[in-house]
Amino acid sequence: METLEHRSCRTYPENQRKFIVFYLLAYLGLGVISIGIWWFVYIHLLSVSHFITYSLLKFTKATHIGSAVEFFFYDIPKVFMLLVLVVFCVGVIRSFFTPERTRKILAGKTEFFGNIIAALLGIVTPFCSCSAVPLFIGFVTAGVPLGVTFSFLISAPMINEIALGLLYGLMGWKIAALYLGTGLSIAIIAGWVIGRFRMENYIQDWVREFRANETSDAEVKLTWLDRIIYGKDAVKEIVGRVWIYIILGIAIGAGIHGFVPEGFMASIMGSGSWWAVPLAVIIGIPIYSNAAGIIPVVEALLGKGAALGTVLAFMMSVIALSLPEMIILRNVLKIRLILTFVGIVAGGILLVGYLFNMII
Image 1 (cartoon, rainbow, N blue to C red):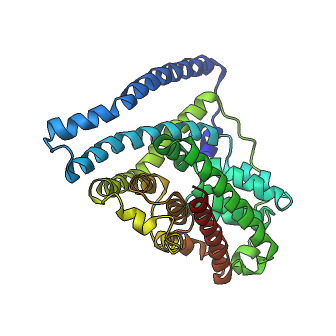
Image 2: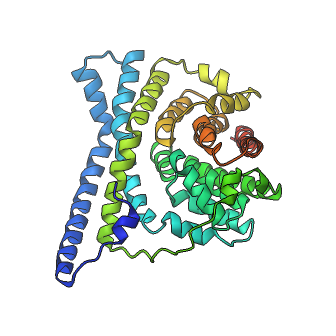
Image 3: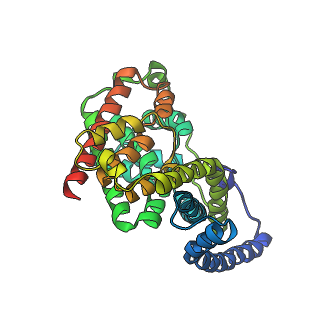
């Protein structure tokens, strides 16, 4: 995908401005038509999946395999349609938040206030395991306090637009709001606690010796056409990267939905089992997935009677404490700091799990 920084270097001669306006209006018109088609298809997905399963494929109603197949054909288009819409909208928003601008916003902020700002920026700023190392180096060398940096590192993968958008679309605004509130709380408090420990000496030596480039980048100026194209490119890049995880997640969710008895998950992941929350966290850490892949599994677990707190703990551990991410962060952090990070975040996730199991 063409980077935002490369696109910001474009200049448009005077005689090309009318073409920019034309293309912008064309994109907007196409967008309005697309939204109408999107909504029409979305509200008919259930009847279409029912037709495919029982009329075209001839599965018998009220059977395990029929239920699983119907779930699969219903969730596949639903999740991808939600994903495309959400990623495009947030892609446009992200065009206002380059990594360089994010570093400038966070640099020099006092702790706790900086933790809050960092956690909020994590929601709309690009982050994945492959970008952990350069972002971490950039934050540290720009003078961002260590605890503030960790608030961003916790928030960005866990409370991203995919997680919130899919949670809202699949399970409603209440669960999405609960996830947003608890995820932000964990990011803010965990980052603040890590900052209190003063563990700057546990960053790898080569990172602490690294010096930021003193030349400042030119201010990014983008037209709205650039931002729309950036959102379109974000859809191509992100959906192209996560589609296989989505299909695998939905396939697992379909199996749970069709074949797992109603009371089975309640007995294992129910609120009455004290060991369910820590077990969910332990199981979630080695799993390599993203929000798009794990949310269909979460949807199926909740539908089969698993407790909300236990399922949220499982989801948070998969997204925020994945083993591959820890291996990548090992390049910039010493073992003691990684273990401190994992312990504090895991403790926050456990607290969230137990809290919601008690009150819901």
